Image (tube, rainbow, N blue to C red):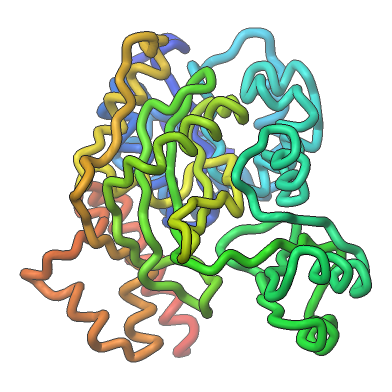
Length: 385
């Protein structure tokens, strides 16, 4: 464990603990957002994580393993007196571990709504989609947790084919399979690791909504259509088209009201082709990558963070992208390397100077960029020699 401290000593009300994921995909952009909101950001990360070098980090706490990280975090959250105003956990594995502990004191200081068993199940797993659909009447496709092929076939007979089968936990499209018929399901059952969640397939465009919520209210949100994915149709998105979608506002408000999530979260959705109706297909109880494009879309998440953490939300008007506007965004580094791997030369044009596309490269954080580049070069060197 190692520490790096700012010269300035701030009170707990001015400090935030950020627990990043194990890649520079999401949390690195939370640092400047929280910093601009007027808070010092402490980081709990694994040894060797480039984000530890960020110029926006106040204190860095490094752990050797995820187990050490989990134990440290759980112990800190159980303390009656907290050194931080808020704890933001981006690592999904740690989110699930904290929820599975079901410790009332821990949840009270992190996500109070998760003390409710239905909310906790909805946060924890895709298996919580169907109970939430029934209890909250959210527009969620029919879903069922299945432990055998027969259960999948029976679900398909009732919900209709095609259907989607996915692991109860995980993100980025990992393990998601589309079965168009009972025969396809029987042929592909060997690829499944039971239990799985079977879900009615909705024909239409897919997308993601990122939100910052407080006390059941959305303070800021962005919606985007997925335009490029890596590793197949259901793989992680590498490029998106952000658009002002006022028709999504009621769904955003419903999700915030029912989940009562406190902080950055989001959900995946499908816009049904024939009706234009939005269906929620997955909920993310942590920040996802789209919020980092708020600065290109006219949404100041720092302003919303300030209102959230200082309790000034009563008269705060939710921030979102203006209707009729759109922003094409390409993720660094995932979309750039996807273009090279897939020889998508047309897509690579979006990375050329003068392109109208937005790229969230971390030029404004030189120490982090340098640490990341040196790490990548060292890995490449070891592969070659």
